[in-house]
Amino acid sequence: MNHKKIIFILSLVVAIGIAFTPVIGITHDNGVIYYGFPAYMFAYYGNGAWSPVSLGPFFNIAFFYVLFLQLYKLITKKKLVKNIDK
Image (cartoon, rainbow, N blue to C red):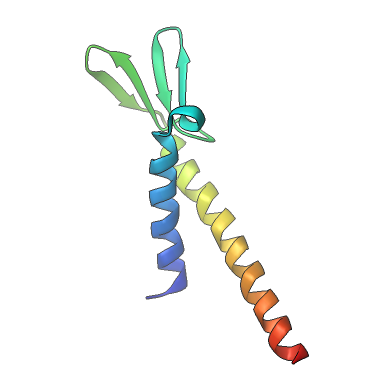
């Protein structure tokens, strides 16, 4: 499997997982509960009413994708440098 596909799946899982983490991803504001970090992904208004928040899910997935891709590049670069020094 391509490393970019793996990073995409990982960013999708992390974005959804953090959205429902109580301390990080849940915010209460005027009776509305917002889920998501760094951008809101879902809003729960009570009585079963909820809605996705505009571009929040796409932003969160892209944010974590870029973060994990940079980490991947940093780790592979460090491994290449270690292998060259030996």
